[in-house]
Image 1 (spheres, helix red, strand yellow):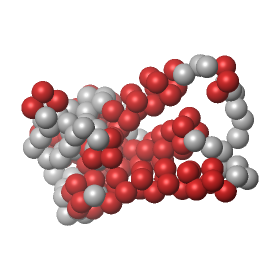
Image 2 (cartoon, rainbow, N blue to C red):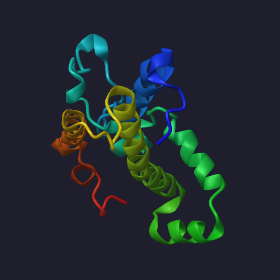
Image 3 (cartoon, helix red, strand yellow):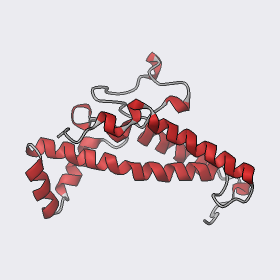
Image 4 (cartoon, helix red, strand yellow):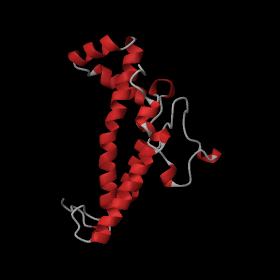
Length: 169
């Protein structure tokens, strides 16, 4: 792991802008099927960060059509550039082009777990200590951070298998 921009330089763009943006886009949009958006004025947005869940990962993009990147546009792009073997697969297992778009969106959303993992690592790097830090107290703080992040996944409303089952086609 290389420290490209040392914390001592005081450059805080990643910490103050990029990570909160990714947090908002990938963790907090479209909470569950049928919900169009959060309304902060109506107190639909929790006050505590720990109360948010990973909504974009299981947003029902076909009827909702809302998330960080408009999923309806993303799905159209994915379909446009789909290689023939995947096009054949989706045509075989989907119920027409509209369902194909939904399934492409679901496939993309499932891949967001990789992005989520990267964000968690980047956030830990920005806020805490290197993974190979020899200080036991630092390692304890890192572990507490990861456990808190994982607890966000354990909430029923954040569990992909509780929201999208295999028979959801």
